[in-house]
Image (cartoon, rainbow, N blue to C red; front, top):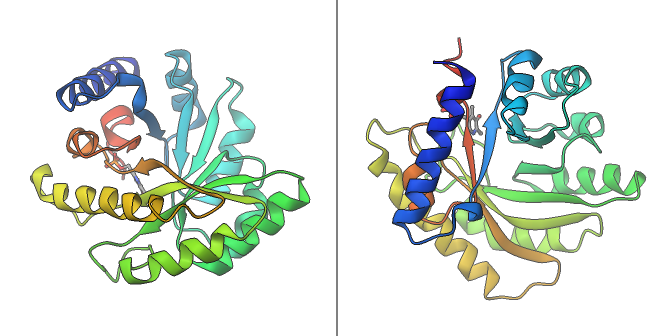
Length: 228
Ligand SMILES: *Cc1c(COP(=O)(O)O)cnc(C)c1O
């Protein structure tokens, strides 16, 4: 299957899942995860009007962003070291993977240098898996309050990556929990904190995530094919 055909299939599945949940189709944005794929694959998807792409590695993102000539928007979705933030400042429009204050402070500093603000999501490790990034549910509330005080960072919502399940239904409780946490935070009406975005769902489980309220789904292999 071509990237164009895969995109059509994924978009149809997104619309079907939104309809099933009684949600407007445009309440879900597709982040096409192009990590390990060449700039040509991004351009092919962009020519099919896919404009939003997600990347996990700083060097790869910076190189690819320099090569792609179509007008696209980049989100950073992977683990991020503070000393690399400078390289993506102004290149990405959102960072999904903020899980500690020191990282948020560096984003604040770098975007502040540009005279701009960065939209971010707080990544939550709901299952407390040692191998995954993300703040614990217990630390989440304190982290949100601390990050909210930074002038050049705008919290737009939460992101999670549940444990892997063969059956996507296994991920549903994690998606539901992320939504519940977002509602609890929203109810506190913290200045500079919006909970309008929920980044959850990947190739194997994005339909379930949409049923549970995802507004950003991060889909790679279902669009671009498998990775090594
Ligand atoms: C790779 C990756 C994805 C996409 O995974 P697929 O299973 O290929 O859709 C989504 N989110 C994050 C954080 C990733 O690292």
